[in-house]
Amino acid sequence: MSNCKPEIAAKQPIAVQLEAGKKYFWCACGKSKKQPFCDGSHQGSGCEPVAFTAEKTGEAWLCQCKRTGNVPFCDGSHNKL
Image (cartoon, rainbow, N blue to C red; front, side, top):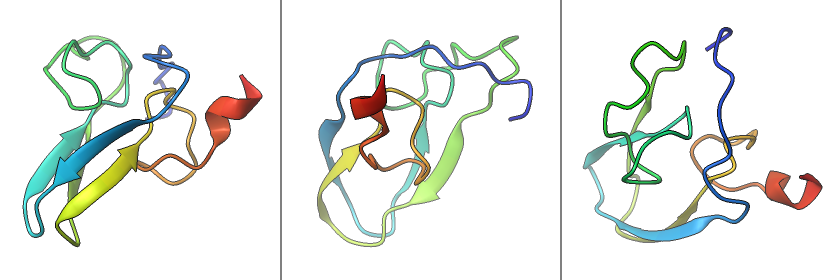
């Protein structure tokens, strides 16, 4: 992701329901219309989505500012924008 210069999709995280064992693709470029998940809009951006498998079923707060140090989860980085 070194060539990735992500857009800020939103300046707050989004609550999503995840299912344990299911694989998800988090948008790293900020261009997806299906935030916080990838819809393929990263093509040509130098960014790639981040694949992750949910460890447990339930609510999770995913980053939309694309500045988190705990991809794909919010770590409060949006508070510095």
